Image: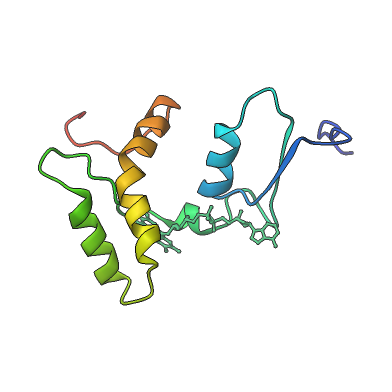
Length: 112
Ligand SMILES: Cc1cc2nc3c(=O)[nH]c(=O)nc-3n(C[C@H](O)[C@H](O)[C@H](O)COP(=O)(O)OP(=O)(O)OC[C@H]3O[C@@H](n4cnc5c(N)ncnc54)[C@H](O)[C@@H]3O)c2cc1C
């Protein structure tokens, strides 16, 4: 027997993929929209569930987006799109704040 609720006949937006990008996109859309999120496998299957290291967000007072830009380009060994990395490091702090406001429980040092 199928215990899932019936799906709506239509959606305003359909997002493909249940990784961080798809979920964040869904959370950023107006709640008035009917949003469908589809994925090819289990909800948690994807790179987002494997990531467990750092985020290129300069949140410490002695940190800087320029350092994250250089570090990411070095680690990327020539494969990174510089403009994309620059956009990421310059906007990461705003995104982290937004995720905190949404209730994401990041690991913390000394409750900071
Ligand atoms: C081992 C590992 C460690 C990492 N560590 C870090 C880290 O420390 N810091 C960091 O910033 N980044 C890290 N990354 C990179 C980071 O995980 C990815 O950049 C990020 O998760 C990408 O998110 P995404 O939502 O675009 O993709 P994903 O999380 O991969 O989501 C893709 C989604 O699309 C779905 N999908 C794919 N094809 C189809 C299809 N044809 N039809 C329907 N659905 C489909 C998948 O099922 C999945 O739900 C790491 C990656 C890996 C693999």
